[in-house]
Length: 517
Image (cartoon, rainbow, N blue to C red; front, side, top):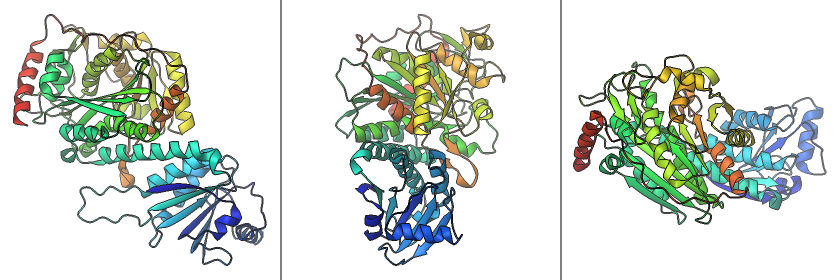
């Protein structure tokens, strides 16, 4: 989709040629001397229409208006919620046959910057279509959307940000939606390498041998039941001086999750292709960074693999050694996301980051707690938690701060290892976060559990591209703050002196798989 920002008042909007003119009208609308104002006044005075949220009036070849089709769309008080609701109700007009160029006129609104962001995101969501594995697919004819505002200069920054975020969300949705056989760890690494074609982005991919050498025993253990070789993807965006400490984003990349030996029920297991939406959101953020080029350094880490139940798969009761030397008793192989993330979090320490944020479809418990409205947010520092919460509010990609009391970690104790990987059903999202916290040391760290927000179920089944808007807003806000200096990079974390036997087996099998690729 091509978006364009134009300076348009109501008179020039009426004179603009296009297939569709969408006029957003708030209840506070003040008519002027132009054809569009006349249309609004006549419709309201005759009781045929009102500016209440989502009220629509469709017009065709209206006198004094050059657009072939006109839609008067009520947006109530003009809040973000009103705008989203109204645009969602009018989604079908963007997909109508014969509509190739649309103008969305915001000249009657007060808060134009919020409106610009909302319109771009809503239009991008509406016109996105998954086509990769369909032999026949019908996509919207619409290719160009012009957004009209009274003063183009005052809205340029919001517009540019909105377009960049839309590009990032589209990439995140695309990879989230792809079936697991079209989104293997290897294919995911190729997508990351494609991003490295942008001049500000570099990509490095560590295969099974390199991951084994790093001592990532927990990550290796999850991958050892699959014939697909794991990939540890490392993306770097350099937008600021080398002396500036980076923000590290860690995205869970389980490209398919059967649950392993602790096999999931068959119903809705197809949705476990979405278990890599954390990884997809990191890819999306880097696409947006390449577009906007903010003055900040960002590292993206994606531990990508499948969780499968073959004869070599890890078993309940096995003990593995993580990269930081802690041993973990695997009490449930379906709690695999935290196992790949914990080693990636340990690896993140070498960058001496200003902050680390991991993003993961981690627990069903978070879906029960927060549904599909807000992502779960955990943070070990109030300043980081508040910054992410505010970014969510600004971007309308909402999250909610959850507790990290030490008492929640009691259930992670094990008789046979330093810790277990699960702690029972109660507070499952919190205990998962407490598990991850054991691997962040003193780094400022936050965890986003997006299990309820990363995709939709039912007739609208598909990835949402969240939390790309939240993360981008956080990074843009951070870019405006005084930058902390990067500390000298640390050497690779030493492996445990007595690694678990599972680690050795996982390394051997992974090395064998690498040779087959």
